[in-house]
Length: 380
Image 1 (cartoon, rainbow, N blue to C red):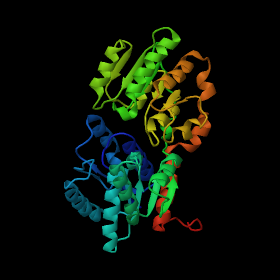
Image 2: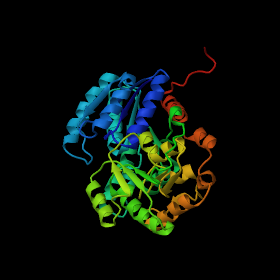
Image 3: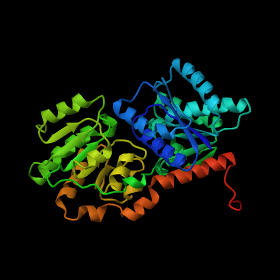
Image 4: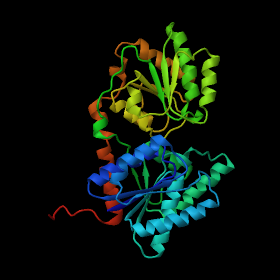
């Protein structure tokens, strides 16, 4: 098969999701390519692209794509159309709102010219974060509904995302599947931390949606609850970094909470004991899966698909945006003997559901269903 993934920003979970699919499907003998934005990402993302470039037999193409709808989109779509037409893919898989729009519109244009291509869309949260109570939210969600006419299948990364889509946009009119994000087999290796390592780790974008401010507030409350100083590490980059540093300074936490720039997650896991994911909104964050695969205990907000990973009744879940409740869980984690063994999912059961090989196999099965290319088990 010839598979082309389209998405906007090569940063975060979507990029990780696509990279894993690329590597798994290329290893299975398929031809794969990427089309994404050229104006986002940095040195870290460039290194990640370099690592998967040998797998991209259909190439890596980067063109300017803005987050919001803009006149320049017409130029980007025209350039993308010409490029995609030359590649002759069987599968156009759009990720995120912008990638989904490009994949479905261009795929439909190719259909008009009698070229057969399957058009898929994975929201990855994106537009689903908008509220129906606002005019802008209504416009975005109606646009999502309209675009269903130009697609062949919807792929959700968790059941929460599927339920949210149905509640805000409507029951899908086309084929839909829930295919969980997965972690590569090589990442299922425990990463310990030194005895003197920081107690807590926040890793992710430094923006309010991800909850760094909630983490800082909860850390201060946890210290008061346990009655002695603790330590923490924050890893990441983002537009609000200076504000969070000022917040720590105001609370006298500058010496006990270190900040480091973005780095590979597994490098950060080796620097601290417990991973905290205090997000206000998520779909299916990879950082939770990566941490569990590395044998790290995880404390997280009860948002998105996280309860589907940790368990709906997990004692590791906290109320989103509530620093007091997050501090309650953090306090239990550092004061309760055997907390990790009692609360975290069992490794074998976790791997059986959330591995990249399972994700890629289920995705490929959907691709084959849409194109009628499933191998005949009676042949060969």
